Amino acid sequence: MSKFKKKKSGDMPAVNTASLPDIVFMLLFFFMVATVMRQNTLMIENNLPFADQVEKLDKKDLVMYIYAGKPSANYKQYGNEARIQLNDKFADVNDIAAFIASERASKREELIPFLTTALKVDSEANMGLIGDIKQELRKVNALKINYTTKKGSVFGRN
Image (cartoon, rainbow, N blue to C red; front, side, top):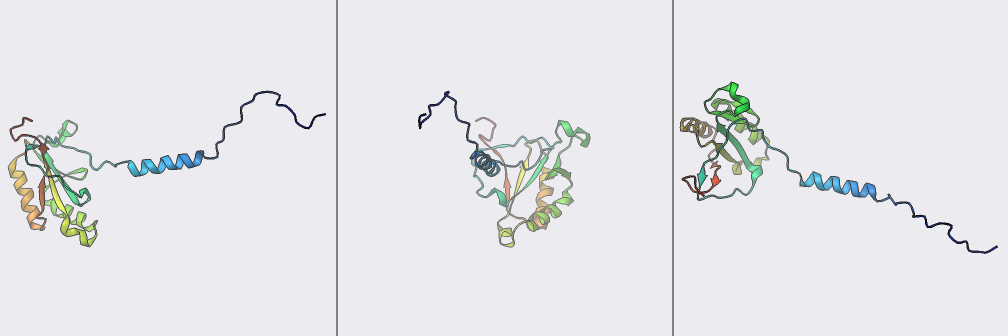
């Protein structure tokens, strides 16, 4: 009898799965942090106009978006004239004041003076509708307005 026994066969050791939960949770946290949530579902056509002098907004969380344009193909039952979209629903001009109030209420009080209203208006939209939107914004003292555009030549050529 010998003290040391030889291996009978060249079996591979079992795969160590002790660190598997750590790896799974690390991936879970990575995707939770890196994923950007969808903001709004566009219900209108939104072909933005072109502009050649464009500035980028720094803090997107301080921006309230108002969309205007004709209803898209999925929402033709709402007509063919330009409509206003606030968040995920069609709205009337009179609903803008309540929208601004709710957006202000959702922010901290010290951030309210820095809120900006961004108008994402279709290039084919009626300027009368945009004028009405601006009048409502003046009534609720939302005077910081940004017009969202595509970067390019004003005449539509890059």
